[in-house]
Image (cartoon, rainbow, N blue to C red; front, side):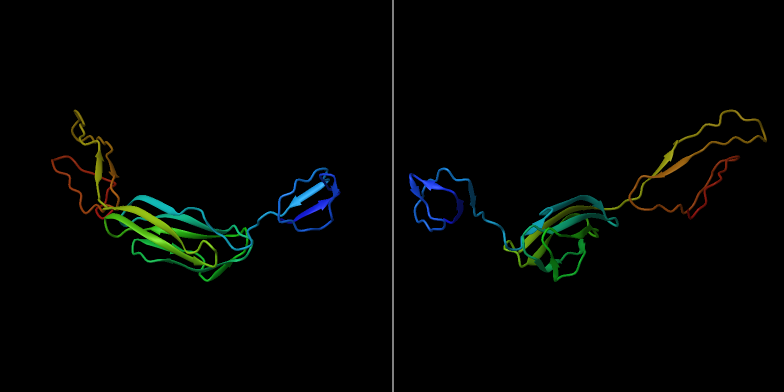
Length: 203
């Protein structure tokens, strides 16, 4: 082993200032002792996560998450390629090849925009000059069919007794509880004396 020594004695004998030992020796009376420690000298690729779950996303909608790629080593990290082959997932961010200096990070946006109902999976492949290359990030999500649903509140209205030629009004609320837009194609009021306002076909 190698060590930096100063003012050290070994079992009653004077120790030389610099030497190489093949056996272990116990030193006493040292005023300083600094062993050499192992350090990381190369590039190390670190990921914020190795898997992303987008849960359930309705077809026609999208959900996004962010992947952070960092260099936790002591030398520049070169991203040779960051690839994703999928029709359901997409990847946007800095182009490759790209150099990431020590302690620096680059971000990529992952998007799940399904077009087919059901479970979806994919994987991002990352190639670099790091010792832990290649690296992979798995993606998962569930695509749900979109549907339209119209909720009318209240479902019935009673105007009670009204004087002839008088007008009474009450409000009805239409709410879209589905996943896609609803277009009102027509409105009809049946029964003598009843009508509507503030609702136009085509809305």
